[in-house]
Length: 204
Image (cartoon, one colour):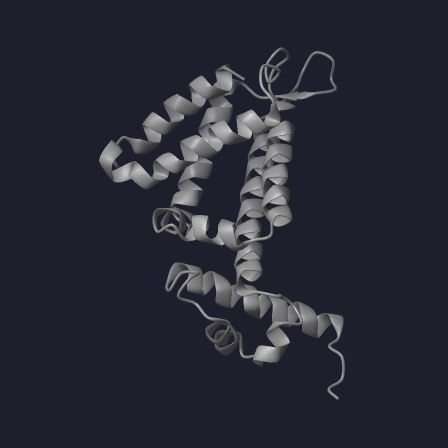
């Protein structure tokens, strides 16, 4: 019987698996990638894979969630750079136009990732169908929580008109315009998105 893996070994194997999954997201996609291919790229036995994930879909979901968390960290860092204390000295506030610029930069970040292609090819929809309902619900809840934190940095009186779920859905709706960047016009796309984001944020 093989010796149990140490925490360091587990962390290293998980890193190799997520690196392999991210590489496959950029090349073969979710549907065409097998567990065999993932373990070959990670350099581990197939049986070891199932010590970490019950299915390839949950591994890919981990990679997508990691992308989501990176985007949130970038958002938080940018907000920290531009936020100022309000009159009560208790709340950070950011002007809507500045917030729109920050989100436009996040759209640029997403545009250079694997996400647009996943959505365009129906891979993300396929993945969501394969995931347990509780995993999808947790993902949407995390989105809503992020936007709750976002509305906390808006000037007083803003961010109260709609629920975090509605705000999150509105931003996801705008995000999907990345799929039509060519039709909209690549030269003007990010300026147009910034305009829409500014209007959306003012309506919060």
